[in-house]
Length: 257
Image 1 (tube, rainbow, N blue to C red):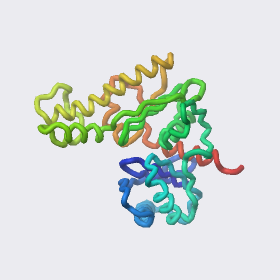
Image 2 (cartoon, one colour):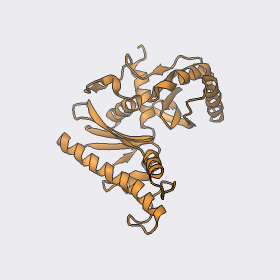
Image 3 (cartoon, one colour):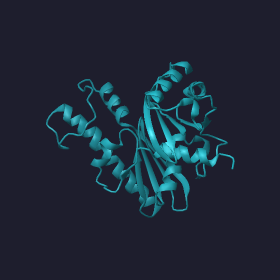
Image 4 (cartoon, rainbow, N blue to C red):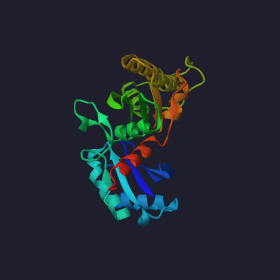
């Protein structure tokens, strides 16, 4: 079994992968003040609860968009597994033809999502990762990763709204029954959820216009199930294991034959 780990600004997601399929998954809140020993203990507890033998793992691979925590989590994984984790970044084979001004800027989550999407879906393909940020990545019909979009995520937008407007309070981001609402709570929820869905509709239409052809769209991330059903575009595919399958593909590409 391979342990895949995705470190985002909000949470750390771990998955046990066998033959490219998720056998179990679990999450830990991203806390920058935790030590490597604390992360090792938390991960050991969660993996043990799911019946995983931490000492019998085939390998471990980590993607991170929190540079200041990458080393800490890497050390925690080494204590947990006895293995040196592969960290997605320069020097790691991904198979992606990245056409960016600076390919090293591309986050590990974008890389993993694009690798899995290219392997499993028709090209061109647009990946949508809805977590702390909403990140869209584009792979064209020739298999080239040509760029993307980064927008504020659901909780970031909610926090910004409530912190800057005195009469507005925190709400649970959940779609109300109507877009036009009759009270402040529902009006905020409408703006957050339906607004994110409308933004995605507009961005996807603009991306396809620039591509000059329709694209497959695949969405993942914790907020995707809450937002994607409210998009006017109805062919967006939900894929909650996209990043972890991408990490599995990357790990396989880097094994000595």
